[in-house]
Length: 503
Image 1 (cartoon, rainbow, N blue to C red):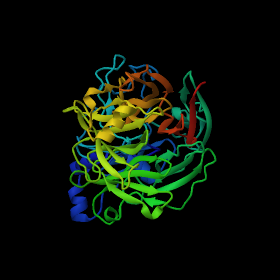
Image 2: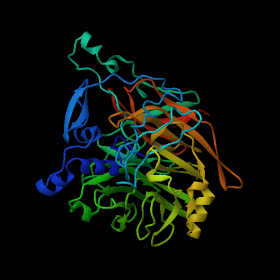
Image 3: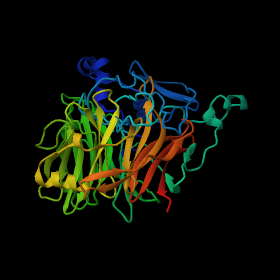
Image 4: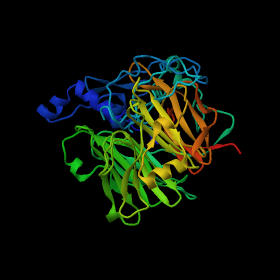
């Protein structure tokens, strides 16, 4: 995902901010943590700001300030990425993980130096020497976009309403101020519940949705059912805590990962902590045998997706280790087609290329996108890998060298990624001076196997949604069968919209 409106700021970045600030005092001397490290924490913890206001984090306290006018620029062109080329954008503390979101990685969420969810690819249509700042996420799936979303005060006069461009902008009932591009159609929509950090849909054809709900920082995040699409009926009954009992009782700061995965039999979601090496776990909830649910150690885990190659099924985790296997940054697999589950490393990032882990997605035809934070500027980048190449790595135990795999040319930074039929989508944009991600578009890349299944052909970038302004935010990207679920947030609330490639 990932992720619905989750703090996709990577744990490594959030942890670094805590260290630069007063982490040692807050955790050691006073015994209480800061209220926030960035505006996304405020939004996750306190909800929507008052009309015409936006959250900021000052001296580790949440405050509201008047919204700023949305950035200008041609959102529909490759060169229109706001701040994507700024050298400052990627200068944040350097390390690892979740979130996107990462809700900002959006995670996940999205880990000092190991697990970040950034990527960028300076393609021929990229803006000036793209940079971008680390995010994950989870980002982040992804993380909420910068800029106003709220309308003016209900009792404001006409002159007041005109001071907020989002209050007077025309909003489509489904997509708000986002512009749907030719070749795609918007189908049904449904409200997106509050405090959703990540969500996932079952394989179908009946799509059951589940979510991680709670706070992006802390130990209360847990798995819940949202019901069946599109007639969602969110349950208040917790299925499983995503944080292990040991970490719920511990003293380390906990960061929800901002991602969730579903293989039809199990749910998966992860988190990291502020401890040395950013330890964390992936929670595995078993639908048929809840008592068999468990936690698998996964340091610096940023994003994860399920994968199926023939008779081999696995959860692919973008991080620094899994279970008993730890061999540096890369892609790790929890093979679920064996009993007990078997952890192994599937792919290694090229030497010197990745500063942290990033976003992960698997298209409907089995081609994987493996993201990482560039060592050069911490922007998000990604390589694509054929299904058979992944299956061979799973069965042989020999990791794929990602340096030998094709780089996805995005043309800007991005802070969320998802499968979309036989392809992937990314939420493109760049970071501003406040390390808030300013989106320009959601674009799709068709993917096809080539060379007898050993390589991948990447199609041209095809915009799906284009930002006319920052009044409406994309807060989630999740596959729904061959379609795409888009989480949207603006003055009219939060909702999920199903988008399909036009037949």
